[in-house]
Length: 636
Image 1 (cartoon, rainbow, N blue to C red):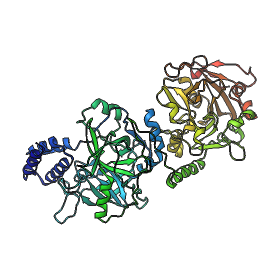
Image 2: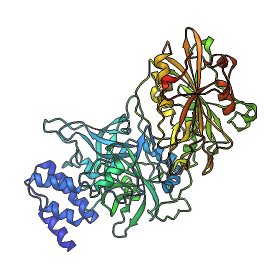
Image 3: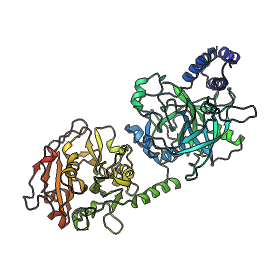
């Protein structure tokens, strides 16, 4: 029966009455379908007689990037060359262990975009495979190029007669920022039959102001069932996807942006040695995606299609290496598998984290970059109104992150700084300076990461927040440092784990969040504030997993009034209401109190001029003014 279908498709196709562009695309698709053994789709394409019928068949058959597993296979959003942390505990160790390898490869994967004609826009994914050479699928390249009789692959003309222009955008993540490079030539498009897999090669030019991303090395070994991979590409909404509910849950409203989809190799076949099957989540738009091996950071294959709830398919890297050798295109040295492959059962176990020179270089470069940040400015309100960061009391200094000489290590970020309690793994003291006249709206970052300047054991990362109702609560409020020229950088910097303390998912204390805004509006004369914040890290905090969860938080706000410094102190207290972290909400109360009381409960000390500027100075140390709304506070 299969032979009859193939024979039928071969003898009845192509239809010579079709316009030239459709004929080329349909012939290429027919070859791809025969190569993969998709007999039903091939038969439907062979039955098509009119332009419209062929267009419908092509649209249906080329949407073969699919959701194979509706659970345990997320498609993680990418933001500013970093991917979001997965929630699932089983994937967490795997993905975090390979983060450096994946984020290195992210830089070299781009979105293929046509700039001319009615079909302009995204048509697929490509990635750098050799210097100035990107690889994608044949059915992607045929959107904008054709096979000429002299063996070249010129760009197509639009209906208006303009030559098609194509770019690769190596950014185009959820922030919608761009990093575009022009495609100057189509080097190769696989034949339109089953003699070759679904591959095309593009020549990409560097820009005058930016070099091209580095090629991703290829993995020369045979894929093994259970091998851990991640597909990097640009999934697009698919109206033909069988499981629309799973698609909406996995992708929300964010389509045609860069994502990382973890998965496993689930099959190989001696009858189809050029390809392998995997279960990473993909959609239309993933055509041409890189299937990355998580053990080595090398490309295991070129994704090209799939069948919903069955399998997705990729051209294996060895096949790509053979093609490049035939075309005399030099590539980086191929990589081989480590001596141990980790077997899997459902979800892959964590591979060893890359510890090569490239990983160390990236971490060292980021640490150096962070150390150059401006940090908190204690003189932001004027030299006569300095507000230094509080200091831990002497008996708590041993808990703190320190320099080699025993002094406190100030972790500087854009417009704010942190003192980290290394024993607890949480920030203990933070300071941010705010210019309310220059606040900017910047899209919220989503991806938390460890600070490379701090030992991993001295900061609480993603494992604390997995599979529970705990959120990563910002100590420095995300909006506070997001102003002026450093706004975008500050926004990203607030998403280091050194600025995170657990808070219940349902936490929504409007008074606590409104304190800065109210003082900016009603008390500050120049729109400037200094805000110092931290958790109360007490020895009797409730244990959870390997951490003690803070129950109280303090905040100090400083502003200028009539050339004088004014300070107000506040505490967020949940001590009496802390429930089971896994199930029950926290309930909070916010009150204003003296700096003396805050110093006592938090184990910190304030500079003398800061204490004397307290609007409650001279009153009972433990006095509390409960705040039902921000306007209830005392401002002097």
